[in-house]
Length: 194
Image: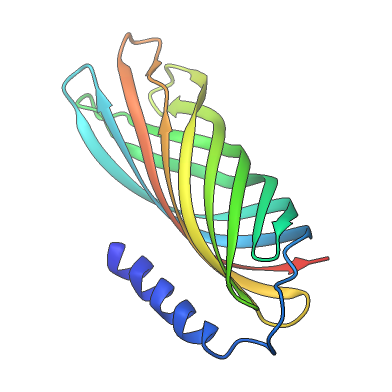
């Protein structure tokens, strides 16, 4: 996965060498986008179990950026990821997942070229932790950290790639098992900036 992300960053940096005509980047404004996501979840439980699970999902995002300098902006946004994100299987054979994950994001952005940006992300994340043994679901909250690149293809359209690490607070199911849930998410998507 790390190789995939590094390759994506390298390709983005190469593409940035063909930047638009010189001039300050236009970082302010509202944008929406959609991403294909590949997530690797992990669980570590009080029953001695630790396991991983992989999931593909569709993500949606929206954000507004305020330019604080010609090449620096701060964004505030939200994102939503569909589906059940598998975290692994417990010793008793039941599987854990995070469902309907959404977040509120603070996104600092630096323009490396007129059409190429590097961004970070600090997120407050939410979802529903579920176990397929029927022991119920619990709302969970956590913190996410991310990094990514965005390249403008023209005045409005862009592509982007990113990596997020999500750490949820421990959750206790009705069976008494307490789990620590994490998620590594690689994403690639397109979007529109207004």
